[in-house]
Image (tube, rainbow, N blue to C red; front, side, top):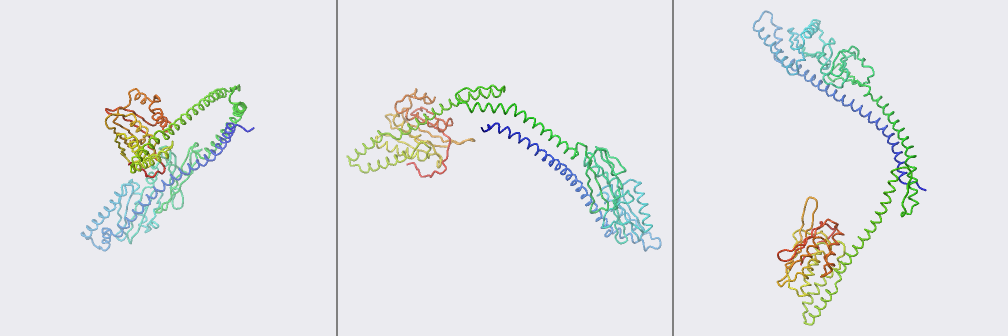
Length: 572
């Protein structure tokens, strides 16, 4: 015998859990690698952007220094002292003005690029040295000694292709030459490293600066807000993993090495091992749970299933498996059987009501007295030789009967229903000679709208039959649309100037109660109520009113559209 679907489902769930555990292990491993690679990429991009900004600053600073050396009038004026043999006070005054002007230009550069920069200029012919900077005094005097020695030895170290270099393991320098003019700038290596440390790349990292020969010059360590100098760039906290980023600017002869440290719980390899252990533990739990389900759930369910399969569906199901849920399921199953029987009975009643509604609809279509009266009138007209009247009446009856028998219990176009009412009223006027007027009014576009057939005619016919009054009867049919946020509705009102509904009948109609089977009400109005309930359930409104003169029936139904309804019906 085949296994029950529930048993198969639980077994499938067990296999799915095993597969999920394996897939979770693989995906977890991949996601973990992705996370660490992404973090490394973000840190690398941030550091690269910082060095690109530094490179731009170095490049711009070199360009400004070269421009001063090549084009500044005061720099050119310094060479005027070369040809002065004796003290010339005017030349000396001009020389001092030029020195002051050059120093002002150097001061402007420092003010633009920051006080961390020191700028100097040496004009060889006049042996003039000018500098400006707000750095540490000792750093400035030491650098003057270094550059003074190079000037004395005529061996000033120049930047290669405008690249900055490390001097004396204390300065990051750039020295350029234009003719006899040497111009340069430097930044304290310590300040340069401090600016990198301020980036706070990670809670724990180390920055090392290497010279052009890849020898370490200075190392600094950032550890949760504290910055310290360290001697060995390979030193680090025990148990910490790390990854290294090395950057060398396009305008630098030195390079920067940044090592990111991670705690043991941030270590990707350690987390992978933890993930493997957790996944294995989950697999063991799943296997244990599978054995429990097999012995405590699947076997009792299988026995319960066999009892249901062997049961005829009429007898009560007895379960004694020691499982509370199965006992409750048996009780609910018995209740469900009772509900199914009740539902079958309810369906039978609904089917009977539908058949009654269809029978009432057919009775409205097949009204022998109406057609016999039509034939009698035609016969009388023939005796009186009223050929034109006979032709007109036959056309109206033919149109009306065509539309009447085209209608069925399904929904029909609203325009067709109005056209049929127009034909019906014309026939009634001719056959019965009743003196009444009528108007059919559309207050909106109705193309494509559909409604139950003979819905309006029932109440129009009721107005003609029961609205008797000595004065001339007037019947008005108005159709409009009522739009709201949630839905659109068709509002149909049928109003006459007759005597109105009897009070006891009006009360019963508005309460939805059945009325006595007199005057055609049972077949007409009650049939309309049944059809509205079958088609729209509770989403409709039918209101009966007595006005000062006559009666009014208001019908509100949801607007429905046919998929393809041609606008071929017009109201005469």
